[in-house]
Length: 368
Image (tube, rainbow, N blue to C red; front, side, top):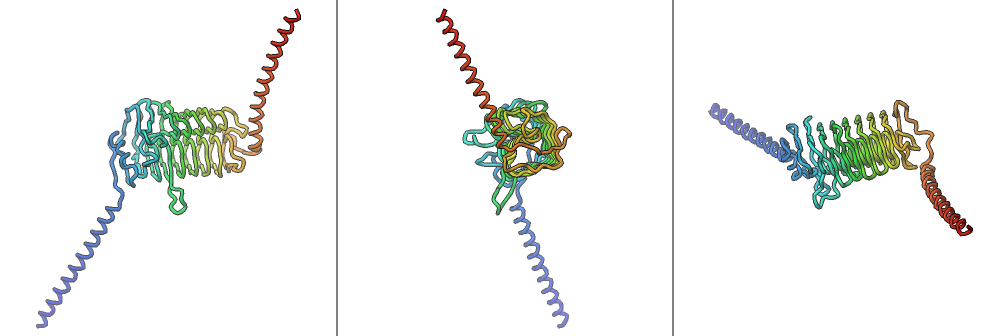
């Protein structure tokens, strides 16, 4: 009788162990399914068609993995992501190359005219890694916010849920070609609003019809840049042109350099065109020629009166940058105003002399 009881006890224990095992494995399986459902999907990019198709998934949290080099042979490219539906995912370049094989117009479809222009139009809290863009033709846009890689990098600026966009290990190789836009134009990115760029480079020349043009970035509001550089020349028909950044409002730059020449109507700097909010630049240099030579010097073209940048261990053509002494902004403005006034007075005087000469001729003829 005792042995029968022992056997029954063993059976009960075995059944309880089986139930426990089923519960554990079932729970683990359920958790695994839940985790797989929550994990962002990953899309593999093999072709230009795959690249275009990102647009239809641009506003979801997903990964996009470039599997091989791609050539864009179209004469018109519709950028990935817009203000209406920005790119929010992660693009892994996987150390591959995307080549524009000919002159290409960066075209914004109807209804998306205020979007950025580039391979990507707008990214919002998105990320791009390990990608090289090669230009075998010029890139052009009739709009502002234009960059070879991204037109506009944007992030969530709310204090409760701050997120930024980022670009890491990305390169633009131009082969002598350029990118052109109506303003906020950069070799890599047109505009950065709450974003960061790290270990990135552009040798793309920049031609701008408007303000804020830079060898790497055109316009910045709250940006962080580290270990990056630009080698392309800048030619602008507006103000605020810099070999590295055109206009910067708040942020920091470190361990970076620019070597391209810079030409603009006003506020041109070999490194930065204009600073209008608190900005720190450290361990950086520039050696490009600047036209016009700025009253502020050639490293930074100018800055707002209340926001003189902090510059540490920076050099322009092997000379350490010293922002002192420098005239107040008001004096510079007066200088340019007086310069304009001089031309106006000169023209008025020339007109008066001309009229006086005509009157004298008539007087002499009448007298004779």
